[in-house]
Image (cartoon, rainbow, N blue to C red; front, side):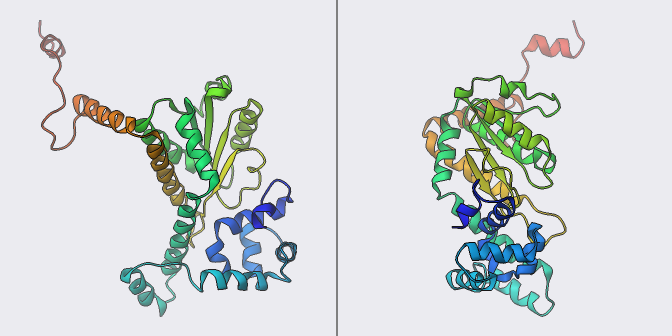
Length: 299
């Protein structure tokens, strides 16, 4: 039901609440209607109406069902994590709360990798000849990470040029041979939905990796992955977008099969030839002798 209310058929407020709940299910039992409303930017009565539309009399009842399903705390693993919590308990350590939230978010991201949407995205990224990626503002670096790592396992990966001002390398490409991956989190750049709208109009498949507050993406993209970004820190954290990216690359690696290993080995050999690795005696290669003399300025 939450998935339905986060879909294109829901109102803007319902999509906002639904998207946040989908990304933060393990943290909902710790919220109040007021705190949830403040985080997603809606009124407290709107949270109550949302819960009633799901069949619960109020937010407290909805929360009780979730708490019964997932327990009274996010999953934490191992003695070190338990010890950290115990040390922090008396001082109400804010970092301990952040750790709980981030661990719960990590579980949620790994759960995405078991969905049908995930399988479709991996298939698209494995089989589409040309894959383009874009990230805006603080997410630019994550798009770059995606491109740099994907280039190791398959050809046809390209980072969109934000400075060019027209995205022609994507929008003039063959839509049947292309797809787009977009990373974006609030406050959203106006370029992000505009690029997505133009790509959709051109018939280009789109994967959007975004946060729990995005209320414009679902009706515009083919696959949308909502990642938790609020971990009780002064600034929203996009660290789990990187985790999601690593899982995507792992999925593509598995889908492509043995050819990936050959490509990665050859890429490593080329890097060794041109640049070289620390402690690797096999590289880099020296320039041919005539070019060495010319470089030194000799005749």
